[in-house]
Amino acid sequence: MRALKLFGLTLLIAFILFGFFILFSTITYFDPPQKIILSENSVSDTIPCDSSLSVVSWNIGYAGLGDNMDFFYDSGKKVRDTYERTLTNLDSISQFLKRQSQQVDFLVVQEVDLHSKRTYYINELDSFTNKIKFNHALAQNYVVKFVPIPPSSPMGRVNSGVLSLSKAKPINSTRYGYPGKFGWPNRLFNLRRCMLVNRYYTNNGKELVMINTHMSAFDDGSLKKQEMNYLAKFVQDEYAKGNYVVVGGDWNQSPPNFPITTFGENYKVDFFKLTNVNDQLLPLDWKWAFDPKSPTNRYLNESYTEGKTFKSIIDFFLVSPNVEVLQNKTFNLNFRNSDHNPVFMSFKLKP
Image (cartoon, rainbow, N blue to C red; front, side, top):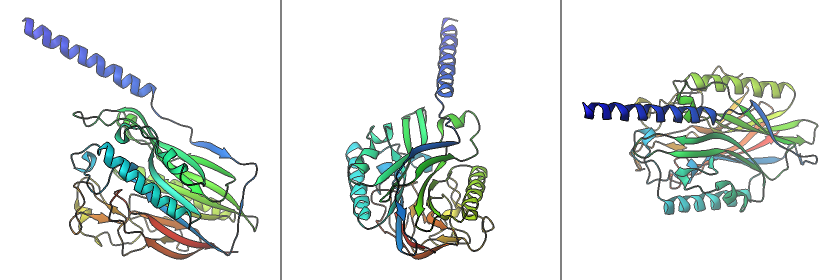
């Protein structure tokens, strides 16, 4: 009888503690306004039309998903890499972006950690801005006080976002929250997806709208659909005003009509269902720009092995009809420091 009472008391205490944890997570739930102006500049630069411009997009995997890593959320086992390897990854990523900043006009980066357990509370934003003397803005999309999974080694605190950098000083930088949420209580521990929009004056009286996006990954497809519909309306509204639109980022889906079997039968795996962007989402004169021969993402169910690990293209660009794409390429870095390879595009604003 005494053992039974002790067991009941233990269950009661565990239930109470769980209740307090859910209450704490609910109170601290990251639920920002749909639109946040992150910065405004009274004096901004002007982008020239009819001249070559360029952009690099890279999901850096928070410098914690190098080629040695698998990840528990992708049917792997590990939760985070070692501190030493995280620093090595971050340094290599920073050096690459610094080199690119000497050649390109814009950088759009995803999964930049500010103060997260998974990256040993390193401020990665400082690592980039100390090396790259560009104008910058960061929009948070993953802010959770304590992620309780996996139970054996919880992810803990996460604070991360998307980062946009540019030579030119923008008119403003704005965070737009995407619609849709996971069901409760899962939403308490998941990302609040968003896009980061930078606006620049052009020398013909219009604006260049540069968008950094990171779409949902492990949903049933309903969240991505809401996000894509929101983005499609947003960009078409901007184009209707006469503005130029460039979108870069991690779409967590392949371009419209691109054969998802190109890099193997990764579409069959259970942990991440690869699909295509709906080819009816936008009019045909909008262009999806990517290098069809080079994968941009590798799967994290295992450490990276060339010729074996599943790969896909989920990082690319979208441009409005008044933007001419000059060149696309993927930097083949063999996923050494991130589970994504960076992608490049040069383009011209039609006068």
